Image 1 (cartoon, one colour):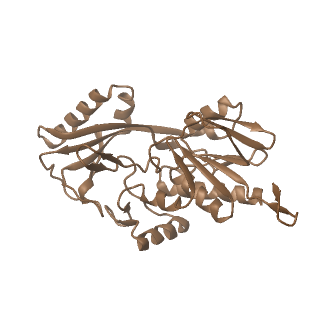
Image 2 (spheres, helix red, strand yellow; image 1 turned 120 degrees about the horizontal axis):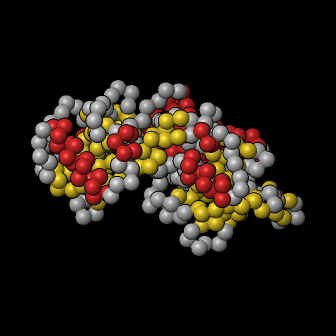
Image 3 (cartoon, one colour; image 1 turned 45 degrees about the vertical axis):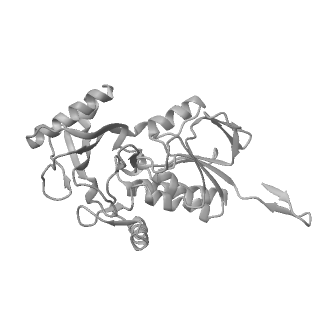
Length: 325
């Protein structure tokens, strides 16, 4: 794509790439593509970036909870190098087990760092897309003018990405293999301190999968009785469609049973992660159709880790760089 310069010479414009979803995979892909000189725009239906690296601030109580992913670990060199850079910049700090890191001041910080300076639209839901000649036309729920892009990257969980593809009459083979377990997350503040060793308790059986002390995380301030509690996948599946009030009460009761005390919440909220934990992957670092310049990336490609989402986003970006030139 070219425009006429001041001397009448064709000047190449950077390819425009749309990324649906501003979690770790989308942010990783966006940063690499921006470094390669492309024009990147991200759209996310949420109120903030981060995806499942989520943070919730309650304005009434001024309490803050990381109610999604809790820690990051590196198994490979690429993400280890990135973690070291974030550690030096104060964006992450060691927490929980050796080799584990929490983000500072909340779990959205690494994603915000990758997206710094890029065009990001939160609260914008992509409802569909269609091929128009060699470009992609995106439609948004917020009644904005449709936008045209040279390439399209999907990062929502596979079932959500497949619904968008199905509506457009398209497919990315392999996406159908990705499955997820759900998770109900309880954000709780109570008057009593629930005693357990360390900052994280993983019971390993029953309704409660893990309990995290919010106030003990690096860069946080707050009482140790502020907790994020994740339910087990099986319990979450069983109660997936239950009313939030019933789930909240059941999770508080399960926590009380675990510690043998009656819990009186000062603050309690639940959040349902329908696609929380990858159970089976597509078996490739990313999915990409070079003829359509259409791709999918995320932890659904490589496994249930933040690092997997980062590596998958980087892999798809490299495919696009090789294709777009």
